[in-house]
Amino acid sequence: MAYGLTEEQRMFQTMVHRLAEERVQPRAAEIDATGEFPWDMVDLFRENGLIGVGMPEELGGGGADLLTFCLAVEEVARVCATSSLIIAAQHLGAMPILIAGTPEQKAQFIPAVASGEKLSAFALTEPEAGSDAGGTKTHAVRVGDQYRINGTKVFITNGGLAKTIVVFASTQPDAGVRGISAFIVDGEQPGVSVGRVEKKMGIRGSQTAMLNFDDVLVDGDRLLGKEGDGFKIAMRTLDRTRPGIAAQALGIAQGALDVSYRHVQTRRQFGQALGQFEAIQFMLADMQTQIEASRHLLYKAAEVVETAGFDTVSSSEVTRFSAMAKLMCSDTAMKVTTDAVQLLGGYGYIQDYPAERMMRDAKITQIYEGTNQVQRLVIYRNMDMER
Ligand code: CAA
Image (cartoon, rainbow, N blue to C red):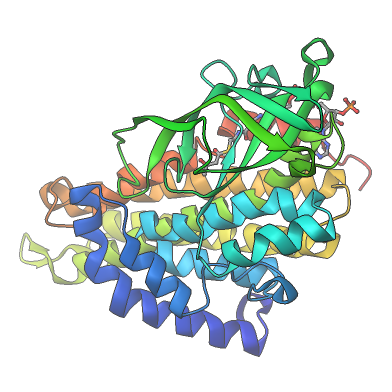
């Protein structure tokens, strides 16, 4: 039982691995080159039950545990980071509803997200509230039994494509983080508009956009939890989704190692394959070691977070493991992909080979769902010195 995976998890991993090799990998370079959102990948993941794989079965999802969800993201990211983000972002958009939604809210919004009929988004970040997510300026004012939302969100994955958006807005500006509330907003309703669509270094096929909310009216039953619960809902969401980004990073790293290993077997210099040189062997050995260590931490984190469930308040162990997995896997992805470019030499630097794409894609994993500086802060605040 490698990595302690169950038979079912291994079979699932093999299925996704094949699907990724046969159907995703041939599209990866083109998705990156055109920067167009790959709707065909959405269809592929819908057909194969991957888009809502980690959402509850009774709400139309795959009912998979968090580790199985991570295996899906990892295997797809191994060949195409943009495509793996489709699965991870869908999970992120659904998570606040799964965590804090009433049974009615879950029944109303999750099935269409779980099936992929609607894309989802998590709208937390603002121009002046990135790492300091508590600095949210978007506000929601109660008008009768509705709320009127005004503000601007930036760097929203699936912005302009998502039809189910969880928006964080302050209902009590003088209360700081305790005044933030979370609302489910329909992406097509009046007042919601798409601003700039970002041109990015990597994950170029994923749409990242600014979203404007101008007098957006939502009914009171779109509020998640109570007024003022929003910041904690956001933090609890990230505790449960950062492992997905760690899985994406790990997949990118493994993909870069695959490419590097194949290259050094065939590329010959000074009369022998590159892989015959000890200096090259040492680099590959380090890459493999960093990936193995990262994988063990991630799979352990997935187990810790899974055990806590969707609807319990995170323990410091959950928060810490989630942040440690994201930190370590993304740093590994950056290191391993940079080394892969180096190992491929000139071929690493040109677009005919996937290494440079993988290096560009890896970078975002150190930034989104909380920069790695934020992860370190979170880890420090949740350290366990009792053991
Ligand atoms: N679970 C539950 N509650 C939590 C919590 C958690 N994990 N973390 C904090 N809280 C609670 C605290 O207990 C505290 O509660 P009280 O007010 O009752 O005491 C409250 O929340 C405020 O906590 P802090 O004092 O720790 O808050 P802070 O202002 O110092 O911020 C932070 C902490 C960790 C820096 C946080 O702002 C953060 O995580 N920032 C990064 C934001 C982020 O990850 N953004 C990613 C956007 S999404 C994205 O990137 C997706 C994508 O594109 C794919």
